[in-house]
Length: 242
Ligand SMILES: Nc1ncnc2c1ncn2[C@@H]1O[C@H](COP(=O)(O)OP(=O)(O)O)[C@@H](O)[C@H]1O
Ligand SMILES: Nc1ccn([C@H]2C[C@H](O)[C@@H](COP(=O)(O)OP(=O)(O)O)O2)c(=O)n1
Ligand SMILES: [Mg+2]
Image (cartoon, rainbow, N blue to C red; front, side):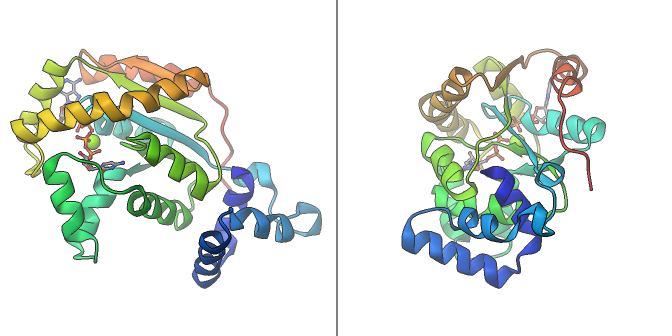
């Protein structure tokens, strides 16, 4: 199903995209699927599915487990496009969008922004990118996030990385992060850790059951951790860039 979505995205105008989203809301099914099967038959001159199918990796782990740091390394070595859910949400706050103040207060409290907002930002980022391999960092953080993504995008991730790190180490890293983030303080971190254990671990368990999870020991130096990550991507086959 993802193949069709991926093939379609670069070919539709944003007005068509909006129309499809409206159809989806109105009829409760994935309109991308309906449209793409109509227009993207390679035999009729559409773009070959296999060449445009994006490879999607979800990157999960508690706050401070090293997701962003390792994503940067994966981008450098394997040419992925990094989409950080947290960065997309912070950009919404900075751009004074209509959801900005709600996102700000949610992040400040260490809670999770409603899925409809986050999934839409991720969808837009994927659709406006030419890339065919994505790291989606810090998403999905809840089962609700996961289900909303799968419904809207119409596909599951190819693989999921989970950086496993002791709480004590995560707290230390977050409090030393020094990026001026409003949520990098001890009270918010405690709440984020609670939310991680209650809401994100079930997502990790879900992908483990599906055989998609790569659990990486998130302790040690950045280099040591990357040497645990490298073989995951080195062994994979993903689509050739067009
Ligand atoms: N292996 C590591 N050892 C020590 N500090 C690290 C390590 N990996 C990342 N950091 C630092 O810890 C902080 C949190 O890392 P980050 O990649 O932002 O984690 P996350 O995205 O999971 O919250 C950053 O300041 C980063 O530079
Ligand atoms: N899927 C997501 C991702 C992030 N958020 C919010 C709540 C998170 O505590 C903040 C910060 O996320 P971010 O991934 O940047 O945080 P860490 O890198 O794990 O420290 O954003 C969300 O509500 N939903
Ligand atoms: Mg991060």
